[in-house]
Image (cartoon, rainbow, N blue to C red):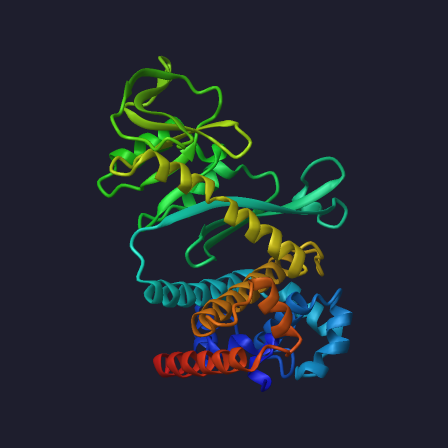
Length: 377
């Protein structure tokens, strides 16, 4: 593999220097550093995420061995603290937008489910005193919308750990997709708004256990003998003091452990079994959270300020979407020798991918590098 196929340099194939400078100009940032530029910082943080470098000192020690400019760890730390993390978030949004569009075009998708959930990264409260969480812990949250079909996040909202999921969920709404959420995202006002808006936000949201179901009216439909659906009806949700203004469809089904789950949905022309499957497919976002925590150094925070913390986390997410995109593209060209995402990532980082995979990755990187350079030029 040449230099641009190693993880710290991947971003250069999907974000041109002109695009990076445009983003910096958008935030009024002038990059005056001679060596530790924004581009260099990104490369170091991607390398730290994918190779699980344990500290900025470790990154500075090994960075030159993977082709990075030699930088003192104190310079990396200073830049992480000084760089407005909104810039890194914007870079993430540009890249994830490109890669999601490319994947969706390839798969020729129609409207698809979008899972919404959050994950919390906790450390000792003395390390992040601005993000007090519970007891002796501090924590920050990443609220994410995610599609199984692209296996990538769509949007990310960053907060401190005590921020409730429900209100933040409104920032992740996207009417191109079907909003799939757990109980934290339910409210009477929200589901009423979703079904009465001119351009509806379709949804499947789990009901809280104490929500009353009034004036039930069963929906007709045939079910398979092995169906796990136990109920499909419309009703009014809530108490007389606070209830929905419109009738809502509720589907009841059992999960793999036999526990009953109730979801409310705006989808009327979809079978109850399909709705149950949509909700159960939320496990993919949990797998995503687990993967980034286990493989991208997410629990090991190098800095203590909001800029340092979120610069690191958004760069880790950039690393994830770049690797996932290459795995998806490579899988399409290597049907005879499939690799799991974990297997692909391990071999890619060790530069030991099979020859046909290396060729596929090189062709993909060259295609998109030329494409995006042409667009930005």
